[in-house]
Length: 64
Image 1: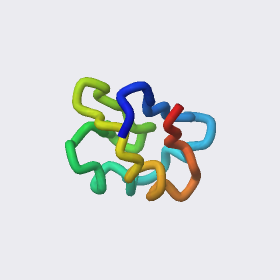
Image 2 (image 1 turned 90 degrees about the vertical axis):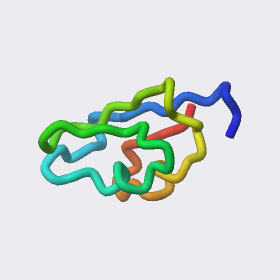
Image 3 (image 1 turned 90 degrees about the horizontal axis):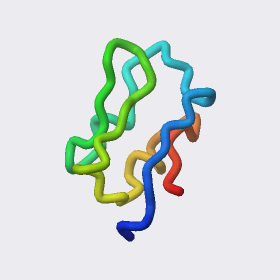
């Protein structure tokens, strides 16, 4: 929950062939997905809670 953390999408780990399951668990609606592409992060909304990181099955979402 530190404001120094940034959510990074590792597109090389994201299969980009299905609806991203982590998008729906974001409590502040900071993740968006267009089609089946890798999700994008609205850092103005992201609170770095880590819910999406824990939910992503391919570990494509990372807090750094």
